[in-house]
Image 1 (cartoon, each protein chain N blue to C red):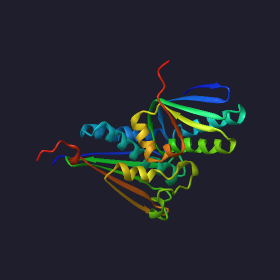
Image 2 (image 1 turned 30 degrees about the horizontal axis):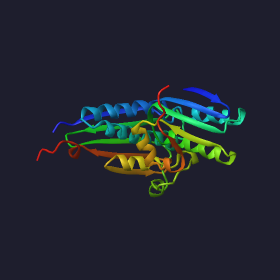
Image 3 (image 1 turned 135 degrees about the horizontal axis):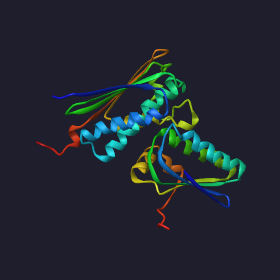
Image 4 (image 1 turned 90 degrees about the vertical axis):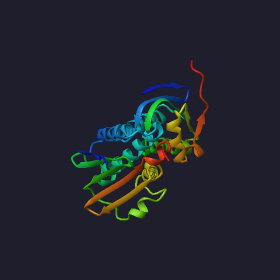
Length: 145
Length: 105
């Protein structure tokens, strides 16, 4: 099975959120995701990278975020890693209305959860956060059996 | 981003992408018109908006909340279907009025 892996490390700058989601969307398009799924993939990546910059690094522009994309015949896996402040209580952070910023509604994780088939968050205080998301392709394809 | 103020109504025509890189710009544009020009109704026209995430939705919700105690309103017009789906998932249509599609002028 052919595996296509892309790893990109970029500065924690807001304009790189666009680049991160465009890259994921390009890979998704190659894997024949439907247009609506590409839109959802873009939102999920946007949330993960925005979280890394806003919460992980408190908007410091001189840090680095790593985006790892991996596609095979069955799925697209996306990993977003920062070396920022970490999340003290991951379960609480993933609650519906939880946000440390009143304007952000705590929707980030909701979107990641809703738009991806799997979501896993690993975080350690003062070490950083890793968000792993998986989108399966098989059920999106016309049935072959 | 084009804008037009008619009486106390601010019409904003959003374009492209609304995420963390330009959300704070939108926030200050709207807040300034609320504070300095006495705007009490904000209508966001989303015809040409291609992308929104929680940073963008947060700013919209925040402006709604800012206008509430001023007895003002925030409304959304012409949200493209994929943008509307994301707004729907966030529960926004339960509190914010979505205007039906206007005929092209």
